[in-house]
Amino acid sequence: LNRFSTKGRCIASKDDDKFLIMKESGNCYRCLSIHQVHDNVLQYKETYCSNMDTLALCSHITGDALLYSMFRLDAIPLPCPFSGYHTFFYNRGQGDCNTLASTMEPCTQDSRLLLRYQACPDVSGSESTVEELQCLATWKEGSSRYLVGKIEHGHATSNEDRYRCFVY
Image (cartoon, rainbow, N blue to C red; front, side):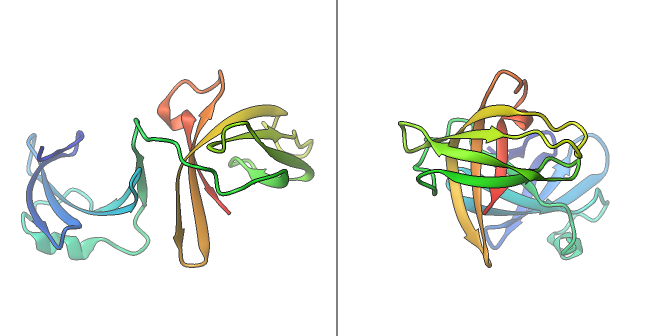
C-alpha cells in the first residue's frame, strides 16, 4: 500500500521516516515525518499543503508542529505498568481536578485497570465515573513515560473517545 488514509498517495520517501504525499485532487503535496514509538503506536508531524513536490518540503516541518498519534485497532493488550492501588488527579481540558483524589485499582487481568474518577466541584463538566482501561502500549521519551489504553465504557461512541494517552 502506498496510500496514507485520506491524505493521498506516497510518491517518495527518505531515511525510513520521511514521506512525500500527493493528494490526487489538486496541486497539494505534504511531507509526513512518521515515528514508531511502540508496535501499536505511530506518531507523525506534517507540513501544510504545498505545491513543492520534492522531499525538500520536509525541512519545513517545525518543532512546534502538531504531533498526531495513531493506534493499532487490533492491538494485543499488554501488562499495565502499574500494580496495586494508586491515587491520581486528572485534567480533561476544563482544568485540574485535584481537590479529591481519584483511584486506580488492578483487575484480575494484568492488562486491565479500573479507574474511579471523582467529580470536582470547581471544575465544569467533571463527574464521578468508573472506566475500565485496557493497556495497549508503553514507551519512554526523555524523562516522561507514556501509556496508551483503550477505555471500556458506554459513553465511548468513537475511537477518539475510546483511546487515551496518559503521561506518568
